[in-house]
Amino acid sequence: MKKLTYLFALVLLAIAPAMAQTSETGAFHGAEATKSRYRAVYQLNTADTSVISHALANIQNALNDPRLKGKLDMELVVYGGANILYRKDKPQYEQQLQNLQKQGVILAMCENTMRMRKIKREELFPFISYVPTANGELIIRQEDGWAVIRP
Image (cartoon, rainbow, N blue to C red; front, side):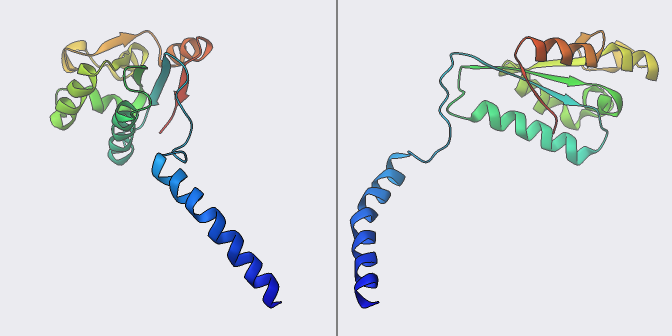
C-alpha cells in the first residue's frame, strides 16, 4: 500500500507542472471561434423585467466575448409582452438599446404584435426596425443558419 501511495504521489508531481502551464496558457478556455462570422438572433416575448435585463446582459456578454469580437451578427426580435422594451414611455432601456445598436445589434419589433396591441410606431424608439412577424423572422434566421437564443 505504501508503494502505491508513493507511486501516485510521483505521478502527481510529474504531471502538476504540465497542468499548471496549460492553465496559464489558457488552453482550458472553451471552444475556439474558427469561423469568420457568427450569427445569433435573440427572441424576447415577456414583459418580465428580470428576463429582459438578463437578455440584454447576455447580448452584451456575447458582444464582449474576445473570441467573437468583430465576427458577430446579432438581432434582438421583440414581440408579445416584451414590447415594453422598445416603448418611449419605458425609457429605462433606451440607453442600453442605443449602445447595443451602436455595436451592430439589429433591434426588431414584430408588427403583428403592434397590430394586436394597437401600438403605433410613434410610441416606440425611433431607432427600432420592424419585421412583419417575429415567428417569421425567427424561422428565416434559423433556416439561414443563425443561432436562435431564448433567454
